[in-house]
Image 1 (cartoon, rainbow, N blue to C red):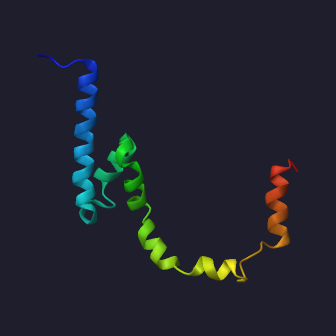
Image 2: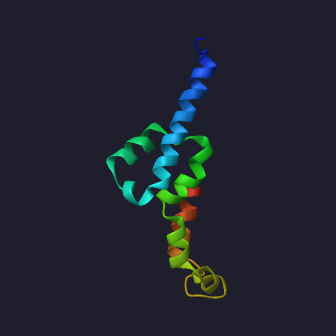
Image 3: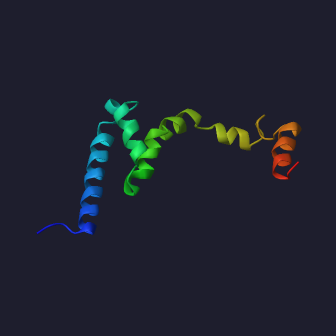
Length: 97
């Protein structure tokens, strides 16, 4: 029995998910490869998009490196406020100036 159009689309999407899961499980081998770039360009399946973007952006590593820095800045650290010129530039572009 031939596949209907909807069945075919589901089958293709499931095959894409399988390929992405295989790549996800071998992440250290595929990171920064042309194959990964091509797959990202073609599109990441909805069901895996959040997990894969976290890996692509190295979110876990960044969280470890930045641990405790928000607390310092939010409790009076030197980066708490923008200099006047930065605030002026930022709000000026929004106000149409």
